[in-house]
Length: 277
Image (tube, rainbow, N blue to C red; front, side, top):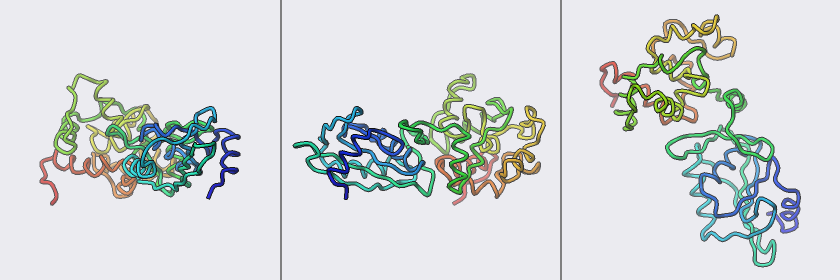
């Protein structure tokens, strides 16, 4: 249990890599963002009822504990249940809630507006990681996601829009943009982890690429060589036709389950196969 004296000392020291101040009127996805960033770092605590400047304003939301737990269950992937406590009368008539998470065994993300987004803690800020930072994080947690790495030289033009439209329409039940609306396609694929800012991901190319063999044109090394040098499972020449090889299939059980299993079904369906029972 945290005492009033301990809490006042934490507040006095201000926000840092492990402490965040928030009013309890914060949106549920904003709270999830801070907790995810802490879980993906070394853990931390959000103080609800404390302003950014350290002024104690107290908690006002009814059923706050239930709201916090629901937010963590609904907005964090995988769900992360925090330690919750309330310190009474931190200042006369003003209580403060502590929402604490430890360093996660998994890499966590925020699920909001049908999109899964990762966050890390950097000093007093919670922000999205770069692809390199995210890769290191998955390596540290023992679940490196090779399918999120961009493939050098691969662009939207290397993807089969017919199969993508079939996937989004039949599997995701989501309307796809017109073929000539490149910005809309890029937004959709970014939100689906099939593209990153640096281009098409390995997963996107393997699932929906027109001719994966040509994706090496921007790099003198082959896809197999790049995988070997990155200590990733090698993608052999025979596997680069849109089929996910077994060593990579295990990586697809990470934080984007919303597309990888469906993507495999979409690939089979687009080739005329019947869906598995």
